Length: 249
Length: 260
Image 1 (cartoon, each protein chain N blue to C red):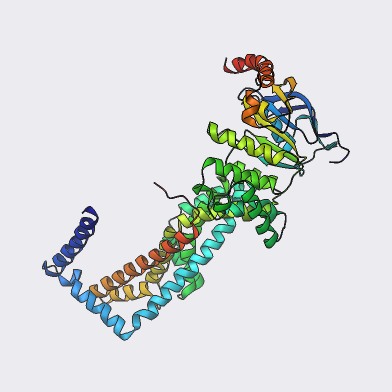
Image 2 (image 1 turned 90 degrees about the vertical axis):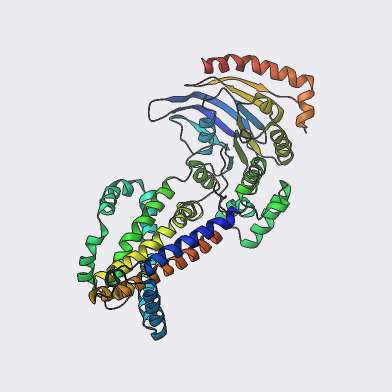
């Protein structure tokens, strides 16, 4: 009974909010209407303009995720494994992580231009730290006995990293993959919003520039659906790759 | 190990840790090749430290460890180590865990699969080769770890309270399995435990350490019980009781001192 009740109440809530928004008599200039937003999305789908922008945003996010993860993994392994490097660099990394990343966006626009790469750079600064911190923790918190056991079986330093450190860190990274994917998309969209010639963030900023509230809401709605879909995909990949993990709870 | 009388020899081994704590002091004993020797002592007496020195995971502050008559430098390549803790890699299946040592030593995929399947069967894990460690019971995980160490065929086996975390019944089964694997293998076993019962049942000789710090060898007790042994029958015999009593009278005072 409860299993059915919860989704019913959830759907009811969404419908109530949408109905209130549609028929509540709010100023359409500021708040638009669900029907207009839906109409706009249909129009974008029909003339195909949205796909190009969505493609740009997803490319930027994908590249940021790839580069940020690779960099975070390598630096995390190095600093976690080589005590000297860890001691020297971890205060710097903490300081960089404390920096609000949005302030870097103008610099990246100057350095990398209005194209894809300034957004990728911005996304990388967000993804890198999530992956780095998880790898660093993952490597340092590997149980001593696992390392000793592998060494007694004859493992070299490279084999230790491959068989023990990396898988241990990977389990932490996958646990934070939802966060990384979200950050990569945030990086892309915020970067586009601040200055771009294409992408979902650009679409939203264009709509804002022409006081087109409906367009802003439509952009937000599309992004939300995309993030949910990507998150679902990440969940599937995670379940496959972390099959060895005991169920929590 | 042909022509070598002692597989392992400790000569005046003293280990002092960074903080100035001396775990073991002036430990001297030898383990004849092919024998099963246990080290018992009260909790915290530095039994594991002794084992780690023989493994090469920890270097003696003074004194030295000889392996096959040669001073040990770095890790002991002739030894396999069965740890007290759970050391299976949680992201590898039972089969891949068993084969880990082979994989590390560059044994090919086919040979690895053949040997690890064979070993899974030898330790009674036929139906579980594709399971992950978290899906196994404590006893099954220990059997996997035992196969992982044994498959690489080390001359020396070091065991640090390997069955300490198991329930009494499972532990007895593991004793039988260990003796079955060891009998006729020619391997030298150095077995650390605080369980005197276990030590007498399994060993040719029991070495008693005093309570820490600076724990030293209190006595060495040969166990002349006939082999091959059945752990349950062995415990019923009168000789067993006599040996147990004589060791216990030495150990008892130390255990009490350890608690004081």
